[in-house]
Image (cartoon, rainbow, N blue to C red; front, side, top):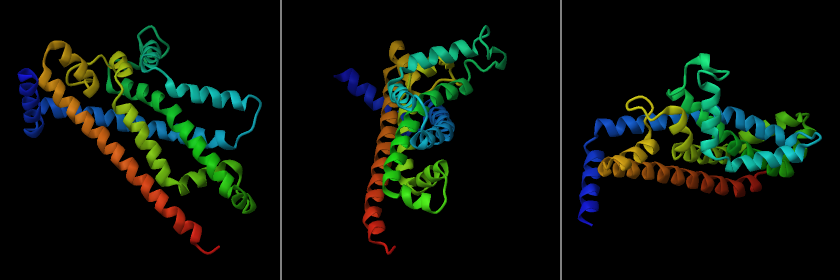
Length: 241
């Protein structure tokens, strides 16, 4: 118990005293995950919107595969990206293995299925309520889907926060493609694993507390967006036609 309390006390000191190593790791984690989510949003929202309105042979199977990819193991993504970016891989000439760029690619692949699946469901639900009006105004299917996404921006914000939460807490893929290099590719999750194995519990605990804080802020922001969206529904329903 004394060891834990001592480690906890030192960890709080590292946080409050703005330890340079600690906050360098935190800053890199947030930068990598935010970039990955921004890239994933571009692909995921468009894919989800298209799948919500497209009709083609095998559509149900594609949606089923997309939903299956929600549980895509991060270590599998890391392995695939590693093989692609290694010297003997097809993209080895890029020379970006064990860099933050490789970590962004891995995290982007992880969040795209999540964003696409949630966006598809969001657009499908919205089309049932207002799709006919948009069609009557001459909007095409994909345009209607994109307009509905823009209208449901609060819900889209919740989707993106959910994706960011998954990305920032991910460890397997970034460990494989980033290499956990101090000052270069060491992020919160990989640093926690390393420092725990080394016995540097105060730094590991400090990083764990910061990570929990980041996740708590994400959940709080998502909850606020959901409440604002729910509060806007009665206003929209009561608005004159």
